[in-house]
Each structure stands twice: as structure tokens, then as C-alpha cells.
Image (cartoon, rainbow, N blue to C red; front, side):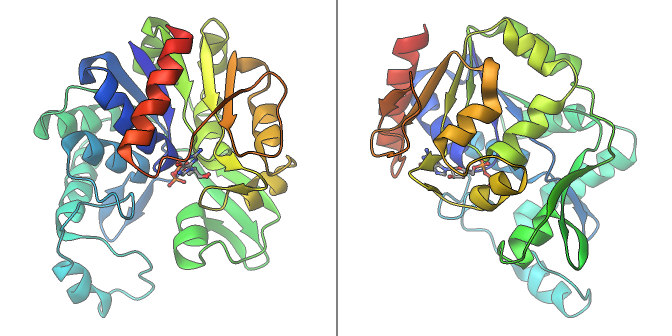
Length: 298
Ligand code: GDP
């Protein structure tokens, strides 16, 4: 069994390749929940939603969020009613958020709610939130602390930030399920997700680093040269004091990683890294990458 640590774009691309290489029952995904948000009465868990829709075969892979072909009727109707709306939510996607909100409000844990959704969508992959406790990522701006979703979706990352913070301050406990999933893994793959907002929250869950230390861990860099393939990772890496390139990513993962993979085109060489084509423009490229990784770790 292979266990992935995932956000909502880079690692899901790799998971497309993994699903062509391994049966779903041999894949576990520990998913970041630091970007979760209560929004318009629903509970959005953006990275979990993306991974669930991917496994269900319904993900919109143009955007890497939401359901392909979804309608936006409620979004259109609600916009004039609820001021301050900054996210477009499709109707079927919203149904998932509302169901999850209902379950959480009735005392279900996020792990239980995720399992219920997986069973509803007929998914045999093991998709797990990193924690059942809320631990939400905010950025500090001149206008105050704003939720990561607001920073990225409302402002498109175009605002100065001085700090990345998490609320509450106290570190979230890992769930027993994710500890067990790491223990059972033949290898753990830290996908090419945003190290600051997707992977560090998972590594911050109490007990995770200790478990990973006993495992073969592979990490794939989300940077090629001085830029990430997409998203705000460069600004966030600089803000937390790391170089915004693969050397910075390697430094963040420090002693955890046994095999570090960076793109063949990457000009910022990390010593000891394995060079592969990591730019997953198509599922075929993701499959080739995944086969290469598995040949190195299994
Ligand atoms: P988020 O939750 O939507 O922020 O998604 P992730 O954290 O999972 O992924 C965002 C990261 O994926 C960004 O830093 C990108 O650079 C990286 N990424 C996206 N596509 C690719 C790709 O094809 N190859 C690599 N190496 N990184 C990618």
C-alpha cells in the first residue's frame, strides 16, 4: 500500500497516474484540511473534495476543483442575497458541502463524514483528513488576518503578507486512522503540493513526523526553476523564511525524505535528487512519473 500526503492540485495530478498503476484499494491519501472553510451554510474541505471527485471520476480537471459539468444556479441566485461572496460553488459541489455541514453539526467527525462521502461515491481508495480538529491557515496582511481561501480566491495572492498563521495555535492531533495508514504503507509519497499550505499542515499533526521517520519517504518538488508550476507557493515559502525553489522545498522536508525528486528542467539542483519529468500536463505523464517512482521505492 502506498500512502500519499496531498493538497488539492499537484498531488491529485500524481494520483491520476497512481490510479493507472495501482488498484485504488492499494492507495491511501492523507489530505490537508488547513484550507477548510464554513461558507454559505456549507462546510468546504477543498482538498478532500478534489481528491474525492478525482476518485469518483467526476473532478473538473480544468480547474482542479469542483465537479465537471456542474451547474451554478444556486450560486447565481444567492449572489445578490449574501454579500461578500467570493467563491463560485457549483450545485452538486454545494450539495456535498451542505451534507457535510449537516453531518458535522450533528456530531460526526470529519473522518466519518469523509468515509460516508467515499461510500456514497463508491470509492475504494482510502481518503482521510489529516485531523478531526480544525486547524485553519490564515495569512497576516496589512488589512488583518485573512483565511487562506480569501487570500487566494478573492485576492488571487496579490496582496502583501507578513506571516502564515494557523488557528488555533495548538497543533492538531493526527487521527488514529492516519497514523495507522502511515504504519501500513510500503512507502509514503509527499506529492508535489504546496509545501506551506498543503504539506506542512499534515506534518504538523502530532505524531505524523515520528511515524514518517520510520518509513521510506519520497517527495516530489512542486517547483521548476524559480517558480512553482502554479499557485502562490513562492510568496508563501519566502514568508516563512525558505528559498522559493526546490532547495527550499528540500529544506522544509529536511530529515524526513529518503528520495527527493525534481524536474529534469529544474535549474536549482538539489544534491542527491532524482531527475524526472514532473510536469504532469497529461495523465500519461503522471503515469510515467508514478511508474518511475514505484520502481525506485518498491
Ligand atoms: P492546492 O491545495 O490547490 O494549493 O494544491 P496543492 O498544494 O496540492 O498543489 C499546488 C502545487 O502543485 C503548486 O505549488 C504547484 O507548483 C504544484 N503543481 C501543480 N501541477 C504540477 C505539476 O504538474 N508538476 C509539479 N511538479 N508540480 C505541480
